[in-house]
Length: 211
Image 1 (tube, rainbow, N blue to C red):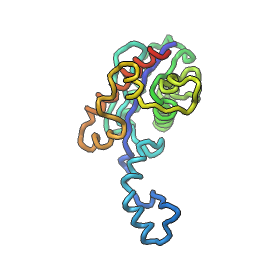
Image 2: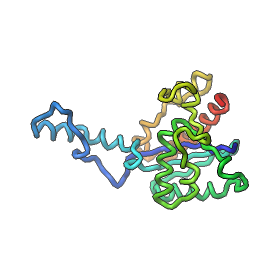
Image 3: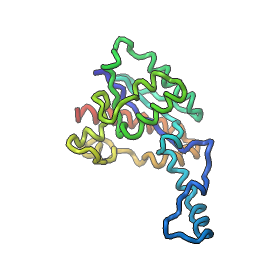
């Protein structure tokens, strides 16, 4: 089985902005003034959560490695261009490997990276992206390292940092996905790219331990 190791980083869509109407106030808020105030106070928080929503997120970095090859990355503020650059790289891979022998590996990839990329592959007509990410949750071609750590459980969650440290590997070095949007706003997209590439490297190491 040939494997594509993959990770992507997202931020809230930049064509959207914090909107109080996106916020649902708790049921015990009855007065219109109190509801409005709650919505205004939580608009930024709701906006930031869009980075985890397949339809509200914007992909700014994709890092990948084919088998034991070098880690490459595609990044920028234009999501369409990021996807197309990744698509062109996928097209350049070993075409002698049939589709049924091409696996996809990532950390929490079944719930996050694969659906994010599949939707955008379809949206932008990037056929190689949509093809390789079109996996069912428990597809034999989908290797989710987080799930591999708990083969008898379906809904167990562990962070990459915890799993890496358990196996004596270097952890996440003080950065996690929740920090990406602030890093982006600070103009640190190169640091985000490096962080994403590091996650691909850690994913590949964990796969080789757990396979």
